[in-house]
Image: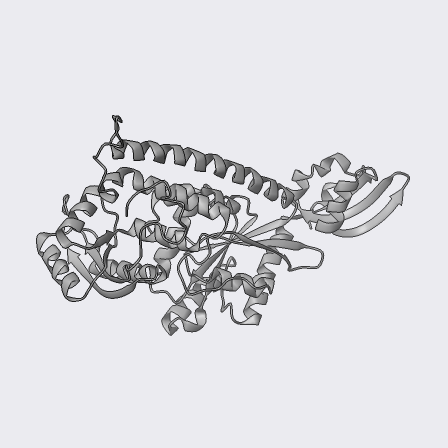
Length: 440
């Protein structure tokens, strides 16, 4: 991959992927990591590689106390991979860990094929699936952060002078361009964030339910089932990079906003997490998090831990959470018993199949329970001149009684407590309003 001024702008692949299709995967069981865990991680890497349009020809695992500082793996494994690459026409070798710039460069020299690490592979998938301007900006920013310490590796001309009379090498010129491009992208992202904040303010009067979960856990399938609307559903990692929001009427006169978000993954590269904070901010505004879990996955508990860690990073681990164990129909019998037992003891956990309409009703009913717990009943006297506020109340609250007296509208309504605070409805409380009115 030669770095040019178009690097980071191409949203098909973030590296030159032409002809790179046949790949070998490499994992490592280091001290403190079981061989089983390393193999399961390698299985996830295979799914990532397939999503990025690679054909996985083989996979190999090395047991070492710690990685080699120069080449990550040992010399014997390098010889094995070189021979495999030559005999089986391998285009790329993908490592299930992040490699340092020098390790990646040394491996490419020693083996003679393209070397990718976990971060670069995930970046490529994000680039493939970035369809909106927001997602594209975030991918480009993450790409530049990844490239900056690797300029020499990706640019063979790195140490040549940039031009006649120039005192800069290509490395220096490229680094300066990366900094300028990064600043430009950051400014663009700030503008996008302002637009997103404006959109969120427009939705602040609604009860916001946000789907979170490990990538490919089934969030989009559940969203389609609850909303009844067409939402992209694919058996791919990171098929969803952009938030999708739908208005859903789960209870009479009490519509909610249901939002699908980008899936999480174990060991998500820091530069990717940092760049996608704008997208993940949707979860920060949630009134309820729907944590969707793939109950059929062998590592579902580890995936749940990963999701909780991301929520902690976002500082929203104190939000109300409804855990939905999906794909129960394909989980083994022991797993089903284990999860059913847990759900029987925990009212904020459900075991379902998103393909079963009856199960979807159970999810909606639990959302309604959260709605009811969050609701307050208010008696208001609102001047008719407050037309905008009245319109919001008519649309987004349950009108229990309505009467007109002079220039005022007398209402008794039920709505979410936090939305009542946002609308500052205490200004219009009736003199006859008492604490007894507060519970829903």
